[in-house]
Length: 88
Image 1 (cartoon, rainbow, N blue to C red):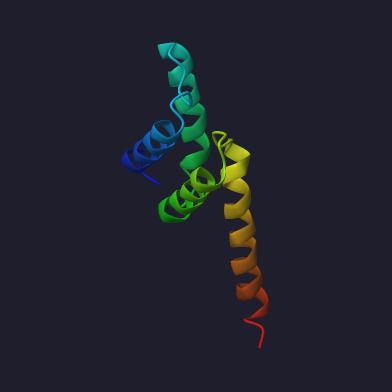
Image 2: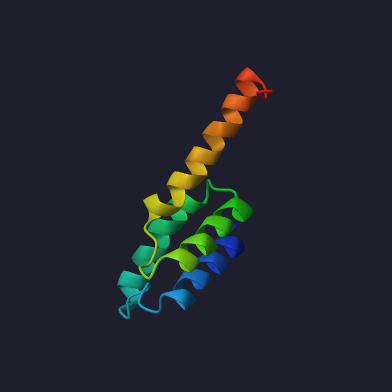
């Protein structure tokens, strides 16, 4: 995922959960950098799908693990199909 895509997704989270980014600039920047350190390895469309699903289903802001877990699960299913073939 590129920097603009990361920015878009973090703004999506912040718009849905206005307290996602702290008012303190240093704390907000630290939180953005933490998220970016994980998001850089994620696929944009898949990540956006899970963030949007989380927003629709939860009144609480997402944690990194809550977005990463479904991505990891989905990838492991694809890896299994690649290894074993599609079941018939």
